[in-house]
Image (tube, rainbow, N blue to C red; front, side, top):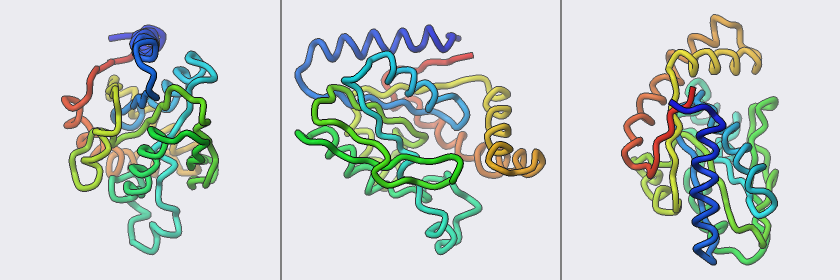
Length: 209
């Protein structure tokens, strides 16, 4: 099991080597169950690589709460069918090929909503980092996402640590500790079980403390 620093060093070395060997833009993905620290890891990688890297978060393609309520899926937010996967897939393809700035949505945890054009992939970017739960999922339209990612890393970690992080995240978002724990058991953990089945489709697995 690695420290965050050791895992970051592994990915940074591989990504840097690939960038040096290719003139093409590189799409790198970070996936794994909720609560493993994917978003934090992606931000560390962005800062380490520097100005030639850009970020396309899968969470930016959450359906809005209004649409989830319309579909009767607000109580399962975070499940595969609560994302605009077609929009995400189209954006990855644009980001891979574009010779001009590509604006992409971000996700605001305080609002618990996606934010349109919150981020940009600059025309000069050499590396695009994308992060999310379902990057290697084979079901439906998700099955096309893996083919758009040049190098995919699976981030795993101790279940008890993930659970603590998730409960703390939901409490920070306004839930009571009891409701937060229930959400983790009823929503997050089934999603985590589904994602665990995608590990073999990733290029490298990194288990962090």
